[in-house]
Image (cartoon, rainbow, N blue to C red; front, side, top):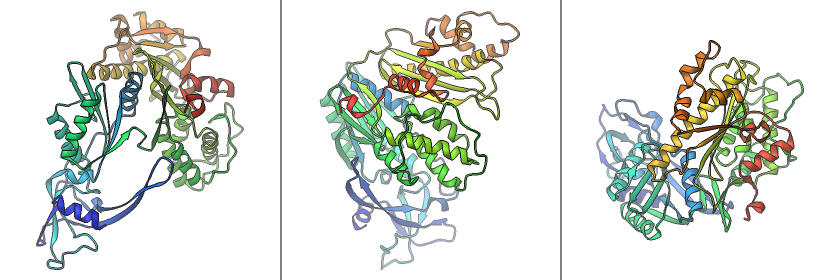
Length: 494
């Protein structure tokens, strides 16, 4: 606590002033935390002074609060490029990151508990710098970091504001920001070191070395490539659900179920906590996306059979906790995608489920399993909606690749297992039964006609995205899981 308090004083976080009646005075508290390593061992003990931001009032002591957060697809894409081209990846941590942000509003706070100035006990803190807990703290810190990077020569990405790019001649440097956790990679090691020295002059930066543990994701390196796993998070979820001794199972969802138990689940808070944690696990586990997507649709009022579905996912994770997403050191710069739809598979509202998977070479960088927003009147319409969703994501990824200085050698190839949807992308003929689709999804045809997308038919037996739309039998599920590049440590060579 003393170390943290002294850091606040050195940073000139506040100045003490007499209280006034027109001040919106907020309180604060000390929060204690144990930071652990990937193996669960204690790294250090932390004490942090946190402002009670819920006492702030809009328009008085805060305005805009939004701060961008790194998109998972952006992180996987940059890691894919770095691993394939054998670039170094440095991991940085900013100590007391939020304390560097400068406030533009007048914020008044009680003096920290246990550290009241004996000479001025009635005075209050007029904050100059941001504190953890303030509503505008993330925005203020991001603005400060962005100014520092831009003064060095980096440019913020228009596609993902949390990505900063420096392209100068043959030099390629990228900075990925997730609040106070930073990844730095590029094609020249000396340039990376120069950026690190620059940031250390601006902030209290800890160099954590090569990428090893980032956002709860463990990075395991081997001569074949990089394996991303969330084994520690899986164990924590199993502990919370009291299922550490559960029997493992080979698939996260059953292809067919018995008559479901329609009685309400007795602990909906636990249900929401577990499903919320499972949603974050999808960062490296596309194989559970369909099952998690289904259970997440019932968080408002879960039933007993929904909880049974969650427990099945946990039993599957129990047996596959060491599995993760693998990036190999040899992968071409070719973009391709698979789209699929399960037509009207949602019984209550008869909406379809869209699933897609996007690869950069052999690396899976983006995927989705989501219920469609409107009812599709035919399987072709459902498949075409899925294809349009995939095309939109492909266009976004192309824009990101262009920004970071990479040009695709050939147009992206999209694979669809519905002949009707495939024909519609190339044939401009519409009739009365499909003209409503023309308005919403004509941009796919335009991209195909311009030669910017190639849509090809693929057999249902080879449709990888099938795993993202419906429960599959065991053998078929395991086959497609391998295609999604989800593997365990032994097969990845770790």
